Length: 546
Image (cartoon, rainbow, N blue to C red; front, side):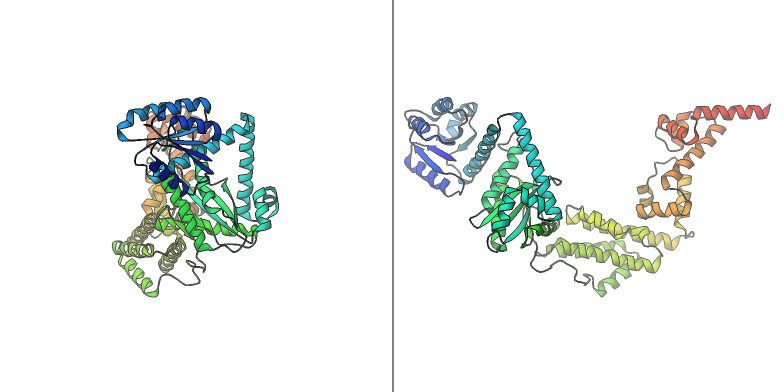
């Protein structure tokens, strides 16, 4: 890319040249001109991509220059620089199609952000113009989608065959690199319009982000290929190879710079996870899984950070429980006392203490949650034959654990589990009927008019919905939904025979939201409509009376 600076004050012009040179952007040359006329001459002989111009200059001012320059090159991009008192001129410049507008004195960071956005747009425009027509664009999109799927399969499953052979960059890396590592950028794209990106510019914004990443990470000894995960839309995956060994601390610093660039210049949130290096490109799925695991540390320490897997197996359980024997004694004592408040406070303090440790990981929080679950399970085995009644199975807990976005969600979920457990124990200790399934069945029979669901039962009786559904079917040889539907239809039959209530009234009394839905379910169950059923009943009664 070439940049032309037009400024009539030599010291300011030279200062801007030095500022741009230090930015580290892919700018081949920086040209200079003292006024608009000289700028037009430089355009014809030098053909820059971007022009940074002042407004007030001798011979020809910046606005006249832009108007004439547009005649020479419609694709030329302009950054207009002016003082506060020249705002009306700046508005005219924007009407001429100026890409950005900066106030004096020029802030280097703002200028860098403008240049990055404009360079991304130029590169994107060049790509689009080279395609020629819409058919070629669709073909390229299809090819890129196929490539994303191919590379996604490689990082998900491993193996060298098709992906490495078919992708030019990966094939070159496989020959020249000794170590490989996967870096995952989890990017939260803002809604458009956003800064200089207009509605519909999502592809352009993605390109700008990719450009920042590629510029920061590639070097003479390093090669890399960047692609979007074909399943997880937020993920940009960078497969990086090095001719020597990968120096993790240096790479982490570079990743922090890349992430800071995305945050600062594009105002986009990005979180980075690094996997461990592998020697064989066919093993990069291992590095990808480690990078994904590292990303989960954001649940503890927040977004906009770089997270890397430790060299040792930190955060793994190593056969040791995070909860000590004195913790077990305390938890059992509070459960015996039914002291939910004290137990949830203790639980909250333990999780918060873990989060406050700078080096703590999601693995450690996960281990704590598993140990806590197993501790509750152990206690319940001493109190009841089947602990899943209240706390569910460990897979249920792992499912919501991995779906959490913040550690406070996890603390709240465990607190809810604790409250349910203590409430259930209290009910069990004071109940005269030890059979919970009979108690639930009686509740259903007496409340058919209510909108009862699995979650309603779970919340009322402190029992896990999945486990309840399974136990109910085992006990009564019918699923919860089938039983409730059958009972509602049976009660409706009685009301149709013995009362003169309207169909809508009967529907409400047996728990259906409207008469049409009730009639549909009734007909499916009995083979006749509610009205036909009532008429048959009336005819039968008449015959008996005669």
